[in-house]
Every structure is written in structure tokens, then in C-alpha cells.
Image 1 (cartoon, one colour):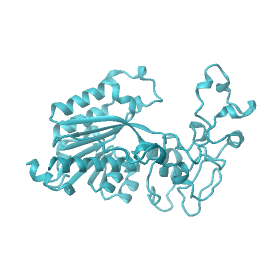
Image 2 (cartoon, helix red, strand yellow; image 1 turned 30 degrees about the horizontal axis):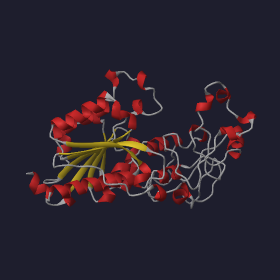
Image 3 (tube, one colour; image 1 turned 180 degrees about the vertical axis):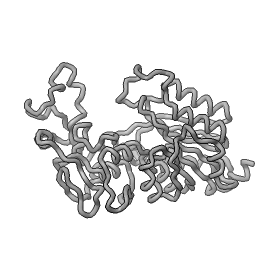
Image 4 (cartoon, one colour; image 1 turned 60 degrees about the vertical axis):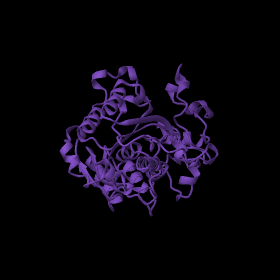
Length: 355
């Protein structure tokens, strides 16, 4: 049965669980994979997901999905890929792992494992936070795959190795019932890493609290007067230690405050950006200051640094987008270029299985 489906790698069909606005889906489509559907509990993602991708969006809680629903969406004779980035906030670097109780460990990931057991897709892929790798829930996830006949590969990857211009490390997993599988080799060496300037240097200049007349998504959050003074005193890739004493936040003056050097900073044109988080629009949440303009980066700039294409649409004309919503959409997304390389890895594994 498998042999008939692996004769043509163009017949790979994917379903994207926890799809958000489509970073993973868009990259898979760019690689040549047919994504037929995306599922997410957040209905606000529908417009961007369906506007920019060929797949259908289903507003559903993945924990309540049944195998029959997924099986009905895969085309006949397709090689079935089940992809996803299960929300893992308890294991992000901003969370104290000791505070996470084992019984609360990532129910979405357990739901992902359940659907794999029931659907038995030919290939599985997952992208997630690095800390997940050492947690019991992930080890159980891998055992589930192995017990169901999957060859499993996973590793921590550095996103710039695959053309993403940010200091982002992620856990990537690939598993196949067709044969061996792994991520394709890096596409960029250290001297070839893309820079902040390459991705956002050509955008129209805007002030804090303003938006571009040509692109309403190119909009930055307003700054308080004290934060305007702070960003003017900030150097690219510097820290708040560059400021005069009166500008330093009170908590940073206390013992232990010196450990928080990555907040209230500027990016540098010829460097990588910091990891784009859900708070990238806030100057005080990280080194999210624009390299030379006195403001935090805009919504569009955050999306570009996540390697969404410049034409990616996030809302219909005239619809208002709130910073917190856009931050969640973009910060939680799989970088498109990384997703594209995951797709190319899947295609390569299918071709290798056919030799």
C-alpha cells in the first residue's frame, strides 16, 4: 500500500494542527507540499490563514478532534503528513520548570500523540521550544512514535542556519513510517546569516505610535515619555547600562537586576534580531527597539523577521488589529523559512524511500 503512494512525492498531503495564522503551513506549501487543512482553537487566525494559503481553516480544539475527521480530509492515495506545533508555554525559557506539575504537562501534545496513534500518518513533524526536549511528556511522545513503527529524528536547531534572521533555537522533530528521515543540512553558514537590515531595512520610516499610510500593518506602539528618553539613550546591541542613572528602571538597580540586560535594547542592522516573542511590539520586553528609529519594531517588521513574506495579509481592509493579538499570531508562528526546510526534508525522505 505504501509503495503505491511513495511513487510520487508530489502526492504528499498535510494537515497542520495548532496552525495559527499559517507559518508552518505557508512554509510547507512553499516547499511543494499540499496542505489540505489547518486546525486551531483561535478563530481570529482564520482570515490570515485562509487568505494566504490554499488550505481550509477549522476552528477547533485539537484535544477534541477525532481521527475520522482527519482521515476524511486526506486525499485518496496521498502520503499523509501530520504536522503541528503544540502550545508549550510551560516549557519556554520564561517559565520556571519546577513550577510545572507533571499532571499538567502539555495536554495538547498528548492530544497530538493520541491522533498519531489513531490516524497513523506516514510522516509526522513537530516544532517546539528547546526545553521540551528534556521533559517526560516529550519522551513519552517519542516512545509513542517508536512503538507505532516510526523512525524518529529530533534535534535543537539554530534558525539562522536555515535563513531566519533571529537568535532563535527550536526543537524540531521528524518521524516516518516509510524509512529514515532527518532535517536537511543547514542552508546558511555563519558568514551568510541574514541580518536585520536585509529584512526590515527597506521599510518606510514611521514614528512611535504611528502607522504607514501604505501598509497599516507597519505600525508601532506608542512610547511613554520616559521610554522615549530611554530608547534615545540606547545603542544598537547595547543594554540599559549605557543609560544615565536616572533612566534605569528601579528593579534593575537592585541586587540581581543586572541579570536582565536583554530588555530595553535596540537591535543592530548587521546582526541577527533577538527571538521574536509574542511581546515583540513592546520596547521594554526585550531588545525590540528599532536599530535607528526611536520606537519598537512594528507589527510588519516582526512578521518579516519571522520570514513571513512582505505581502502576507493579516486582516481585511479597514479591520483593526490589536498589538496583543498580532503579537500572539506572529510570535507563536513557526518561521516560514524554517517550515519550508522542514517540508523539503519530508519530500527528500519520501524520495529516498522510493529508491
